[in-house]
Image (tube, rainbow, N blue to C red; front, side, top):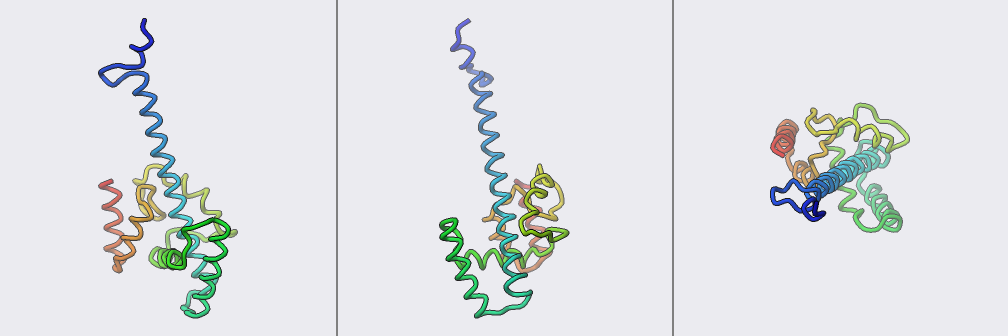
Length: 161
């Protein structure tokens, strides 16, 4: 038997195609997992900003100074991506979806382990965040002020892939 015949099959069912399929599926799963965790992290950062800094109220000057300090610290620690504008987006994200987690647990961030297991396929009701939706999806959804309309759009995006 010729080893090349095993690797290359014109019908696309060769060893190479099966291995490539496994790798492509795995890469997609990894990307969705990273995205889901980042979306949840942004929500939790927003929650921390709202609950700790604002106490649920708007304190403009104080909040602006604190966001600047958080930006400086996060940029030193983690690099780009945490501008004051992004921190405001994270805060707004939490304010638009304040009830996504049933119980707020501390230390902050302990929700990460639970969420990934909770939504393996993305077809469940959206009490948390769907792994099928990216941060870009949620940024677009945040422009919809009506809560019911936003939820409807979110479900449609998930259903339609």
